Image (spheres, rainbow, N blue to C red):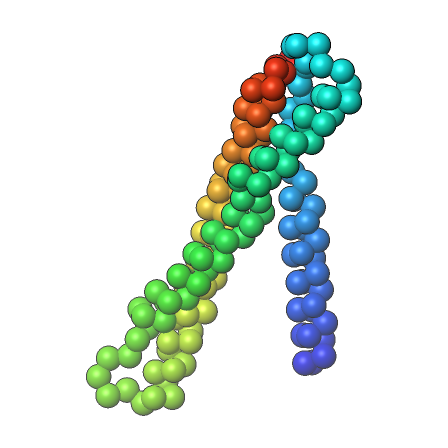
Amino acid sequence: MVQGRKALTRRSLALTLLVAVALEGCVTYPSTVAVKGQDTATAERDAAECRERAERDVLPPVAVGFGTKLLLALGGAVVGAGVFWPSGNSDPRYAVLAMGAGAGLGFVIGSIAGTFKGADEASRAARAREGAFTSCMTERGYRLEQ
């Protein structure tokens, strides 16, 4: 049974990493049109430099979303353990069990809340990257393609 659990954990981790890498590409940079008569090579260079600038200035959306999820999950575990903190002269074995159960429940609740909050934060980060790219391209004499 332990071998099966390890294999499941590895698969879950691999799937999570695969999804994170796939979602990292979710930032779509808008198409632009040269306003000042820039040639294709200049436009491509400017776009690459502006993408690089946007990526440097704004954290990756997946990192932002996952960080938010993780923070809420861990916070939920701490709060859950605190809620189930034993009072009085409890048997230490049951105290640890109660706190562990509270931490587990808090982690699950925090993780669920973190999923939604993290998705919202990731979406904001993606829009911020797109905005940084657009601003950079506008400064260089381009406009968004309609």
